[in-house]
Length: 316
Ligand code: GLY
Image (cartoon, rainbow, N blue to C red; front, side, top):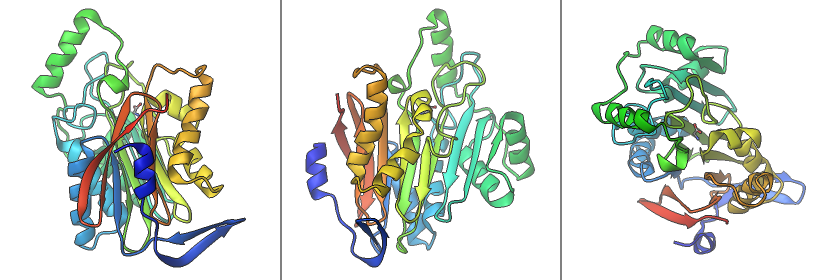
């Protein structure tokens, strides 16, 4: 489906209550849950999130449940177990969550724990902090009962060993990327989760956008939510997901907000960046949007009983 087609068929929300900002009136979409996530691994993620909603879970529980699916899947080589390691062969994971109350939790540079998204949620719910990193995050996870394990699979070790022969720099778009899951539940509440093993064969200690609130993910329950995938360094420099939500607050529709946030990146790179970033967004009224810089991007959308992958073309 082309982006413009998608815009034409994008669903508008239904009923009040509404939020008014200047001339902009945003109604709340209710009773029509939406799950929007990145890439093909978003499809099984959406299934799990949908089940959680059906079982009475809220948007936050659903987003976490969705993100845990690729984290546990060794075939998703950019997330969790089986994620490609850094240049030294360490699998280091970043994740964050944000709920409808504006609360947030995050972990970065976490090792040996399969579900960083759940550790991030624990940070949000069981501590006074937002972010734990590295060894501190690992110790916290273990104290919370998370099991330690080796996250390098035979396949990801073999891929890394092959890479060490030439040490060619990889970019996230070559290795697929982050799973970001945005959810609007039947009450109209919004939440999101974002988790990744980051840039394959990165420098030891590198952290991307995915655990940075406002960069990899942002939720404002009055306006909407947004999440990123792609080259984290450039998402951080433009506070990407926060920017998308703020643009929606100013009246941009979700896709135009994603495009405008990407325009800032494109401009900084003289109109022709050689990397990928994509954003997904849900507005409070249930309208969704997405855009990517170049090539193509796929998002998985579950609503109204259907869960489908949609492909969009890059802006340049
Ligand atoms: N977007 C994932 C990363 O750059 O780590």
